[in-house]
Amino acid sequence: MNFDLNFYKGKNVLITGHTGFKGSWMSVMLTNVQANIIGYSSCSKTETRLFDLCNIENQITHIKGDIRDLQHLLEVFKKYKPEIVIHMAAQPIVRDGYKDPISTYSTNVMGTVNICEAIKQTSSVRSFLNVTTDKVYENKEWEWGYRENEPLDGYDPYSNSKSCSELVTHSYKSSFFSDGHVAISTARAGNVIGGGDFANDRIIPDCIRAAIKGENIIVRNPLSTRPYQHVLEPIYAYLMIAAKQYDNNKYASWYNVGPNDQDCFQTGSLVELFVKHWGENLKWISRDDGGPHETTFLKLDCSKLKTTFNWEPRWNLETAIEKVIEWNKVWISGGNVRSIMDKQINEFINGGIN
Image (cartoon, rainbow, N blue to C red; front, side):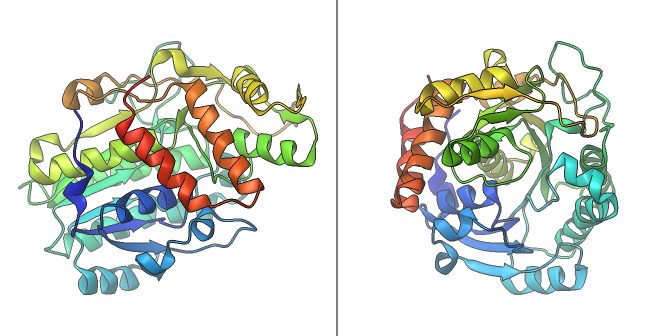
């Protein structure tokens, strides 16, 4: 099912975490169809940030705020009257969850409680999507994909906090929105790659940093298997779910968002693809840094999303890697980042499936 992004033209869309990697791509996509974006983010500064590079701040309502601050959230919801809420603000890094579990839980769990509470107190909201992660499942390291009805029990503080975020959403939906006046879904996405991700402890940003320095890429867990996908895949799926349930509450549910099975790659194979397309005699080596537990095998069954919406991933992993490298070579050369983002969004939406 294709859906027309122009659905969002003129609609008030509140995005939490809009200054993050996914949030920046979503903001650009929605700005291009003239949505009224209310962005709410802690705006934590990193040395380089996609949100600044794509020069979008003056095209949206940009609000600095902490999702743990309920009173501020209520004021924002009351003032801007969002119709659609997409919740992506989170502490998103597994290893940071080990370093600071209290902040991870307070952000990812109580932040979700506060978003749900703000929606409960705001009559304008008709559609709410909570973006979680594929790591919410109780991982048994089996070789088939997890389905939406599998038990939720993330292992580490990050993963577990996102499991809790799911359960908070389920409880609010049952307790306060059972009449369907707000359509509520969650989306459990696989690992995303794309231009403009500068996070620590993510494989593609690590590859980019090594390539810029002319160093070997260090891979911690080359045999770990993950459902890798280009960032535009889940962004498009999130917007599709939120739009479809806005029009018809029957679509409100829990959805996995991931690639086809052939794009569930071992990390070492992903890096091989990167090295192949980057060129410049780049090389990688395996080196375990003795860090905390990380899942070895994780795969998603996305049959529900495919069946419900006639949805299919558009870019295979090799195409995704090509787009990542294209974006980064524009950025490194000082080119126009917003233009390459607009180009790739247009190719994704209009180019069909490969």
